[in-house]
Amino acid sequence: MPAVASIPAPPAAAQRRRFSPVASASLRRVASGGGSSWRSERRLMSELERTVTAGAAERVIRSYVGTKSERAALAALSRLLMDSDPLAIPFYEAVTQARWFKWSSIHAAAVAALLEGNGSTGESRTLISDSISQHLQSTNEVALFYCDLMAAFSSRGLKDRAMDFYTELRSMPLSGRKTYMAMIKSLCLMGLPSEAEKTLREMVSLGYQPEAFQFGSVAKCYGKSGSLVDMERVITSMADAGIRFGTGAADTVLSCYSSCRDHSKMLAWLKKMRKLRIAPTTKGYNFVLNSCSSLASVVQELDPSLPLSTTGLVKRLRSISTPAAEVELVQELLASSSVLDKAMEWSETEVKLNLHGFSTVSAYVLMLQWVDAVKGRELPLEVSVVCGIGKHSDVRGEPKVRELAQEVLSRMGSPLQLSTRNKGRLVAKRDRVKQWLASFPVPEEGTDQWPDATSQQPYVFTLFRKLGQFFSNLV
Image 1 (cartoon, rainbow, N blue to C red):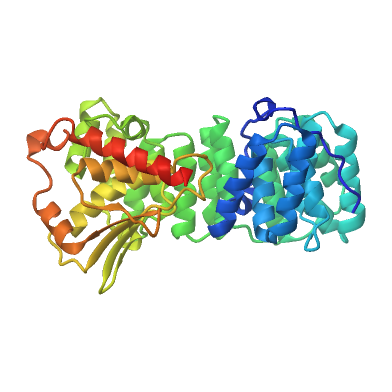
Image 2: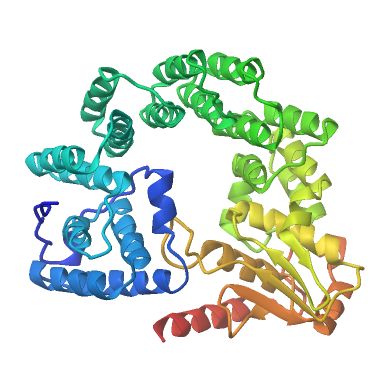
């Protein structure tokens, strides 16, 4: 494949244009990396931030791609593309020259969109035409590439070019369930619900069975555009298309109502799920709690009056004039233990609360539930809360869930501390946890206040914890 024309790196890292486009789920998954790949990616980004010339940046890139694994290199490329960093272009060129290189529709589309957004229209079109002529063997493969181009260009605000690809796509003979699913997804990302619904109907008429996800994407697209009647019509049509009302369909409906913050409808669906014995999933838990703006503001502030019990949380939400449906939503989830039961793992040696996959708001509520659940039970030798180190987070810097977990548990007076062997795990021995739980919560009138030892103690704990994190990251 011909090399992509490089865009010289700017003379200083501060001049790099960064913004956060709506990246595709596939690109986001690759960028999440994992393990040592994630750590090496962080070191790469630090090195690139220190470069001051284009030549120095390209030397760092070539060295990284030449010495790291395919997984690490592709994760770093995806991260640069998500950050709209111009260095993604020379990085992609280095990747195409690696011995393990395999052409990727997602990456090629994202690079083409970045080139066009940076004013390199000629290079962008050359990359697209070369990709089609050299790497795609069938009409269906070209159609899928056009879908990725639609998503990539529209996410950067290049709506006219995205529509050009859609016009090209419609002029081709289309077939295959995968093609229609990709087209529906791309049209929804472009904010075209009526076109997406028309494609969905066409897919059904040709005998390709859609999933709840496709209906949910179209319904949410209508909801975001303000057409709530159309959103509910699409939701209702799921049953007509033979979609069974299970956990997948339930999550789809909850995500639709959460996108337009219709708390009363979400509450009705949660009650219907309870009657049908369909337990909320982690996704559903996130959808519901993330839509509760009053709850989110309580968590984000992390002020001294942050509730440290489920009772205190409900009381606080009622005191700040939260809409009744929002309070009832939180109570409905607190009354169900299905999500907590899946997140909590018991063994002979350890009880573990796993916060992977939860947003900060959901992690906070889940921890309050968890304290209620372990209180009074016979504990194994060790108790831990696994919060990760932020490698799957879209936000760089301090891992938000870990920061929240440490802060909340510290305010509770919990003995759980960051493990020296695993920076994404808070751990304590059974006896210390039993002593803590026996004295927790503090009396009702002080439930939402700082622990009683001294008024300065939580601040000191927080200060030492942040200093420890700083030196740990420095090392």
